[in-house]
Length: 259
Image (cartoon, rainbow, N blue to C red):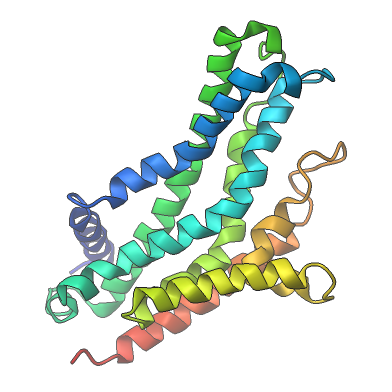
């Protein structure tokens, strides 16, 4: 079978498994959480937020990105568990490997579906954040959402979060495949995030902590000198780590015996 066709079938099979699960709703509802909260905040306290003037889009951007960088790792952990838990819960790993698809194709299909889920949710987050601004533009015109602003920054920042997320996302993906107990991988992920919050306050090597790449890579969005292309080293570290983890995970997957 042609490799491209086999991979396409593998991805289709992965997506088909989620058709009657909560994961598809989760991928849509989770990105809407922060925008909905922001909509409520601006509708109720928009005048207080904008009392010092300025561009309301900039405030909305800060209110969107800052909490997202903290909450998004938990989203990644949950998605990683979903992607691999179906086989464990239904005890179908043996059945998966009896399909007319190689283990490599099955593994790559899972990796691609996992990455696509993260990417699509981040893009939806950008869409929902923009919708909040446009709703406020009509609902509360006094806030000034009709001012000029490059709204593409919402998608550009979401894409950078995606790139800087790939490092610890690959770790969570490997953990969810390696441990049948979901609490183990979730606990390690939470411990990783908390440990970064601790070491970032003074440890000189905190910049190499994979659970902090997305925070350090973005920098301070509210900074007047903020540039999207600053701190790109964290993007490279994240993608490099992801490549290593996925390759090693694939090798382990090929050697694994399903009993």
